[in-house]
Image (cartoon, rainbow, N blue to C red; front, side, top):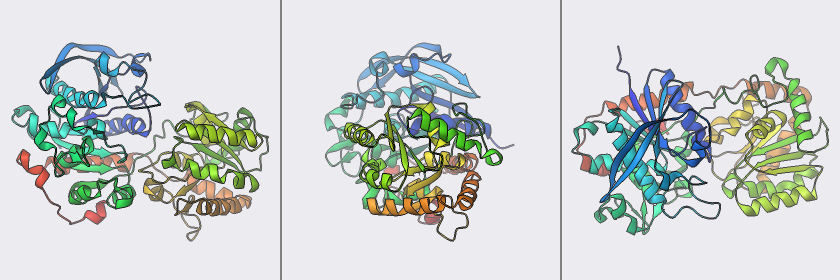
Length: 507
């Protein structure tokens, strides 16, 4: 019988406990998917105020624990919840995590984030030992957890408990790197000798992200396309050189969609449920959405949906610049999201100028997000870069045709309908420009006007399967691969160089 892999999954946010973005969604479903395939999974995350205000059944587990960070002993308590076969452990330290927001206010990041998340790394390792979890794999996510492989490599390298533990570091968004002043290093237990370009210095700053890249045993990104893109200057965020040096351990794995939550056949938020056999019910959802957003109840007018962080990365400026032309093309548009204040103001102004065509809600509203997926005819994602993206996958399941820029996970998951018209499930464009976006939208509208052709496209889109089945097996394959590697002297990891065999296949 094959050995059951023991995985410790560490993330700074997990839905429904705490969420700011897609990291929380992925961190919610991957541990469950791993458990379903036979892994023994434990999860560690901060016990935020956002979590404490919910009635989730979380119980106190360990009253007083301590971890050393630099020369300081920091105490914390541990809370626990067993859910769907997964053990969730919550690290409670009130002065670090009892705050209104996870990472900072709308105006600025918290100034002590380096300490808050270095502590998370150290406390996670202390908890693993105290609880005798002894994982085969520690799976880390983004810069907030990126010091864990460094601490394993240097601070804890002589501790037999941590010997032979392997680490997987998933980059969900390379642009967020955890950059801080050099002065924070003593307080987080890292010697100044590591402040060099070959180690943890990055253009005069200390980089959490570099620690994850250098000292982990495997690096994954959330799509094959994004794994390729971060090796180039345009999207490498200054780390493309380091990533190319470490590309021997870089893998691209497309995130999956959570069809337990996002499925028109079972969706608890929409007016009427539907599937391929009851597609006529989608029109009822459209009318319900139009009514809620106070737009004219015109069933034949194309309705475009947007659910997004309102930021330049997401191409919101392209949508705003195109709004007048979208109206001229005879479309209505519904936009939901929060983000940069300038886009709050700009989009609200556009809605005021075109109250019969454009509806905007500046908020996080999960119920409305589901209604937009079900009620829209098309879904817009003109992102400048998109490591994975999930809404395009949700849209396909709801028969809402994506119009996307061909980047990252959008390019991996959407097949342009005009490419032979076999297997197409959406419309793509290449340049982050209004003209390219409008051209793709015009192609979509042209097909929409042919009722039979549009129905065939919608049914084909709904048939695509982006569940986690394939992705989770790929993670397990990587876990097994690195678990079988020979033990390497801890100080040599940063000197390893790539074996170029099969790299192209992985990314």
